[in-house]
Length: 112
Length: 112
Image 1: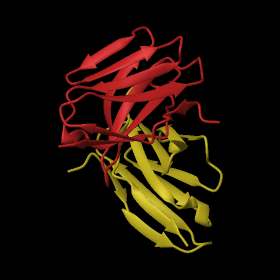
Image 2: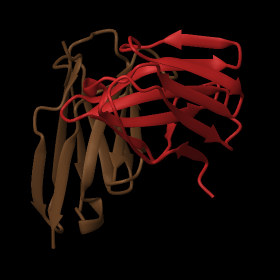
Image 3: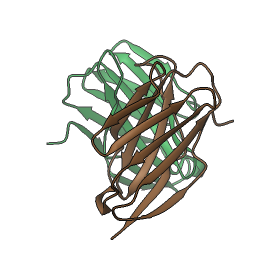
Image 4: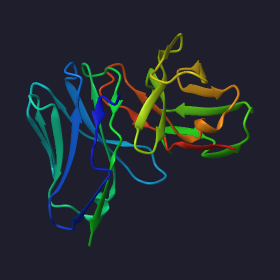
């Protein structure tokens, strides 16, 4: 049973608008969450992370929100750009630096 | 030059053959990991190593073995490949804190 789920396999957004990617988890022990971005023929690259002591972390156009009571996190990209088109994976761990459990990924397509 | 390299990048083999995938890193990290990616399942951990003398099984280690030849090298072997091992394989590294993992470009393996 997947402990980290990304229920939307794909998302299409117009350039300049907001992209919202969602992720749900079931293991209440998870307390550190990350987002990775993956382009075709490349490995995933780290994008942004959040510890459970926070409910928001922002880095430029990227913001991650964490709702611990709902066991839900989301990644907001504002404004979306065509170069953001990629597969996005959320991941979780019990303590920063421990083993990561990944979601299945969401393919984001940003249309010019 | 890439910090984490994987060879080969693509491999087609037949059922029953022995296959070795290699990973090298120049980041000076102690921790190394092997994952496989399947559509909709995200990345799943096969094996990990926290230093040269340390090898640990991950979520899906059956049918695989690893060797940590040096701090910079971590290889994954399929002793007798089977078709359901067809997947994209990624090597990753992290420092001792392990908060962020850095991925290689991946090896696409097809077992016929």
